[in-house]
Image 1 (cartoon, rainbow, N blue to C red):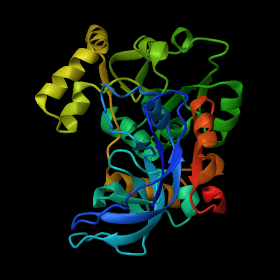
Image 2: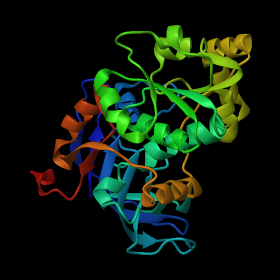
Image 3: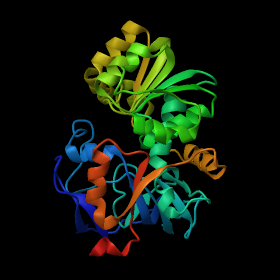
Image 4: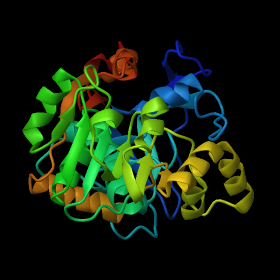
Length: 337
């Protein structure tokens, strides 16, 4: 089968078309023929080598973390799905940019009935990240206030919609163009980062969801109320994540050492800080499906590329100015040209 892979880490590394072995079915697995996949910031961070001290991969490596497709085969112990089902989901680690993927029952859900398979591919990773950040880690309550850093991106625009469904007071940092894009989703308070610093103008909030990192993450500690919470997807995972993912004590100690600065800052400010990696969760993905089908949640797709143009798509997602999602379509005839 075909796969788009990298040979080594590097910011200029190009994905190349390779032939690899098709996944083997086991009694607890599902094989899916991929229809489309989406691109996410984690893809270029892995390519760049930003995560190699936490997550180690062998080369060549197939990138990609979420997809849509049709089930080709199911193991003998699979009960929730059958051959021919249209599904969407995320890969357990990486590997969505290939012709077939092998997953477990907890990694996928039935694709939303009101979306095409191309559109469905845009949802799983960004949707689960937004959902888990808001409700598993921040435990956002009705009518609380929240700052979402990076609101116009793939995760951000979903997180804004989910937060608004709780009647939260939502603030976000966005450029003029980002604000124009986000206004379609409801009542949002904007801070134009070209004109002002959020930490100088924002009233204290109950929670911060960070998609930006760096100085913006550090300054978020200045705007959270005492006893409030911060969740980030840009920092090294915290020991709280390692514990939830059932990682051993040694790995938890390593992460504590890497995140010591944030740990001490959170203790000093009496703020709960979590940095996490998104986990597969069929039940949560099914809740997202319900929201999409009831039109309470809209996923915005900036552009759909044929799979043959995946390097162009990767360049676009890497520039940090994408509004919504970017998808690659495997069914486009250009892929083998």
